[in-house]
Length: 142
Image (tube, rainbow, N blue to C red; front, side):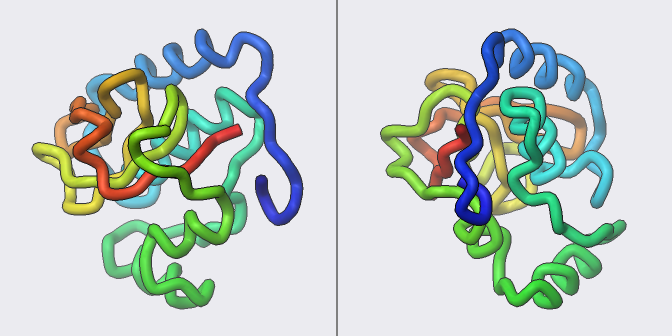
């Protein structure tokens, strides 16, 4: 649900999700253009045709990202996502949902996309996999 509007996964979302994740393979982490939240938003657009967080201001550094969150009235990425997506228990996260948790090579609290028992997180040298059940929080996409 986005601002009271329900988003749904489109037919064939599984193939689009897999293709989107493959497209990110090998991409290095760059704030504002190839970061963990951008990766998650891209997979959500691929699955649903909708960006669940469309009003995020542009940023090019960790400082600018934090300043943008505060400017929108949020204290954290988790708080921003909570305002846009329903949170679910980590154990109930399904393929395509978002999770937050530490991942090797990624920043603490990195966002990732569930692919099954693992989630893909965007790290400095590209995507890394981490067990979903190690995540701290999860949100439903469609």
